[in-house]
Length: 221
Image (tube, rainbow, N blue to C red):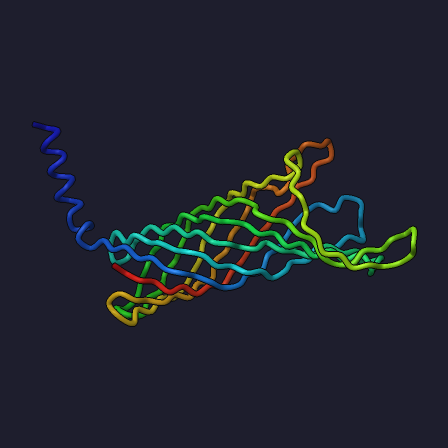
């Protein structure tokens, strides 16, 4: 009897939340800027510079109440950067890194009936899909500079393709009908996971912090 009482009580307490709950799905897209950090050790003329990249994907959200929901995205996000030498101008490498990211976020909304602000906070998991290089390089034997563009093969011993980190964002949402809404969000991804496995005596940590500005179009059921 006690178990039945607890079950009935829980259903009654959760019923208002269930009645207000709402699913929404949509598409998102935008662009970002990635800041790449790594130790250059004794190579004092080496420079690391951030770079822009694409960001697009799918989004889904379950609103438990009119102010709180749970959101999951699946995005193609680029974490690009530039690596060059200050003393040798001919050596300039631009890296393209494509990732699949799946952020899981708590979403908090506030504001009026149509125009609302929202804040997202949570974690993400990702997978490094592709790495490519392009730029210029100096050949000391021929004394010539040449351009290159190539795909970089992953090394299972060296490359850490699993990416885990924190995600958060702030944005605005406008509902222009009962079922349709648009969003604009500035979001950040902070990765404490090194791109490189520490398999050598000299440690080689490499980290990315990515900020994206994205728009989304949502359909609410």
